[in-house]
Length: 137
Image (cartoon, rainbow, N blue to C red; front, side, top):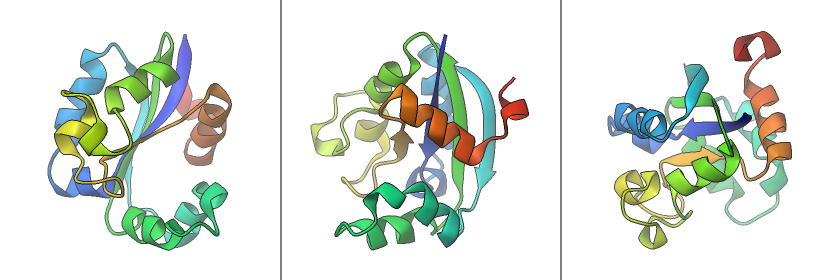
């Protein structure tokens, strides 16, 4: 079994699509190990997205991720990282496959409804950023 980290972003939460996204997660065989609704502060968002600091979209990303509550998720299943990225769809909703989270609920490349770890290594880092170890048992 493998674990990955996911965020249902502020746009999807505000639009009332969190439940639909959670249903897709479960339909695709993920076990939800931990789930928390949280309004990210600027320092938390900046720390989480520090890898993008200095890039042209950084300020817009931070403003977006702090505009409203998100849902933080620890997910588990076989090949969790790859499978969640498949379920999310392409970063740009216009290029995402039909039935994916981003095609169904994303507005554009910046407001694309969901985040997912891109590797097992980053999943471990991202999970630890938001969840204490005992929350994942």
